[in-house]
Amino acid sequence: MKKIFLALMLTVGSLSVYANSATIDEYTIDDQQVEQLMAQSTDVSYTVVETTLAQSQQMAAKMTGTARVQADKEFVPALLLNLFLGGLGIHRLYLGTETLTWVGYILTCGGIFGIVPLVDLIVLIINNDNISKFVDNPKFFMWANN
Image (cartoon, rainbow, N blue to C red; front, side, top):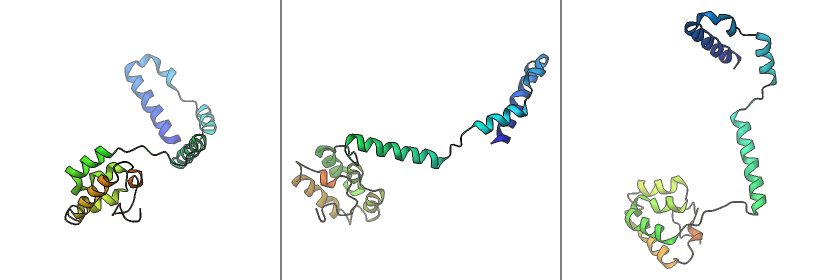
């Protein structure tokens, strides 16, 4: 990091020399000041940011009283997505399932040749008043064990 900082400072200094050669003395680097700045700096790596983010999410969950905040999914968009794009599993993507689940729909030629989206459509129509048990459901067959 120090080398990058010094290289950057030297580059800026050399570019400014070309711009105005009369002010060469203004762009000298004091190694002691650079070392002092580096000693006072804090290390910000991905793990530090990730830990801080996880702590803030836990704090927010405690303040709201919920461990996980879920967005309310509506019946009509899920039904329409299933009706028109059910073979691709887009309705499952809308409902918030895992990526591999809707990829499974694509790899099995539209969810076992269209049977699974058809059953999904029927299940959604039957449970139109409350589809919350299908939101974030990781199972390939969203109606299984519900």
